[in-house]
Image (cartoon, rainbow, N blue to C red; front, side):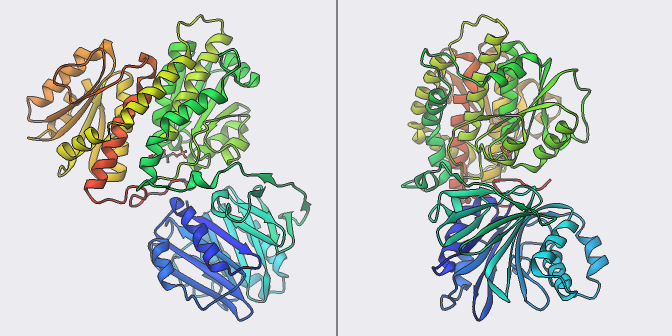
Length: 600
Ligand code: M6R
């Protein structure tokens, strides 16, 4: 959460910083700010709201070839101009942007800053005031920076500029992502490479508890005790067009439409020439050796994990537990003797998962991360990584990453089955190919789904989703998609569970979206539909070809019964998209949310 950029080069920094922040807006968008540095000093512009609001207050006359910027998702202090970054020290000598949470900021304030009037309610301001305090006490700037960071508990990615040395950006990192982009005579700082792709595709990773001193011509990495670290840059394999909307009105719609391509891409990346699945031998071995798999995830990735459990248990016959990351640490189940942990995360940065991963590693267990961002924290810190190859997902509501995660789970389950000598009557490559084609058919039915959204959801206050067996997991995702972007109160339920309480909420006209893709529960889910209809609900039945009814609202093309979630979710994504659109919501950037949840 929160995005950081920095630039030191030869061009005017303003537009580069603003464009970079626009690319990072998915990380938080309740306020934003930049600091432009020139010989006259450090000029700070900040505003509540989106980058578009910030643009209105930036003085175009102010020019400078150095600068830092920030887009915020508020944790400490309301989203306001005063709490927006950059923050400055009392004398305005130091200016700083920060992503993360300083857990001990109250204590630091008491211990070191009792004489300082802090102007914001943020944890961040403490850091910049500490810099000033230690420099006033006689420390050199770099020394003060390392000392300040050594006092911080929690997570941070920081960029700092000094009015008295306008040719340097000081950078530090612990647990929050931050990269340095390098080029001749120009260096940049970014929370995500995509923010600075227009400048360079060469990036240097920064490890936790390292600082970087960035000038136009040099990048010096040091540990907090001052030891120099050498590291080579890597090439960011990102295509600038992947992070543009193109002709689409929203990233979410583009990303929904990309799903057939993503599935085909996954097939290609994980296929041997003879058509069998290709996975890392070490992952196969770890899956084979473990006596139980623990899947840890949050949000949409958790929903993919539930489907993953079905796939691994059904195909590889290995027991799987799926846990919400934020609960796992505080309510850890009794673990088996030889567990393997699978962390599923689109971003690879989710703090709740990282907390569990750190603990799991301390306990000496092995971990596999399934992620869309291979260089991410969760990927680096796990023993193994499986890449989901979905391409950058920009819309806050996850769509293509979810189906990609399930496709990768399919291949992992089949590979594990094979390693265990289990004969399967299921060719994943062929079946995923059928899924990709069915996805295409669904993406071509936008008009029908838009009509459903209008008919059922244009004015409603709430909506229930029901499903049984694996359809239950898909309706959880359908409900999450709808609520997060349309603000309709939407809940997913196991079909049989509704009458144990929630049915009390059904009123005349309450929309109930029922998913029926599974033959063995087809009759029972239809029975549940009748129960709610008898109480006035307005049911919408989404079923699968082969066992659909004449009056079903929408019929999905048939795919293998193990893979129905990959296609059944598409109507749900599109219904949510159109419902949000009809209600005038900001589809790609829903209120209160951020794409990457890097605070616990
Ligand atoms: O990057 P991750 O997959 O770890 O993110 C987990 C959740 O924050 C994420 O899936 C969230 O629920 C999305 N907004 C759902 O659309």
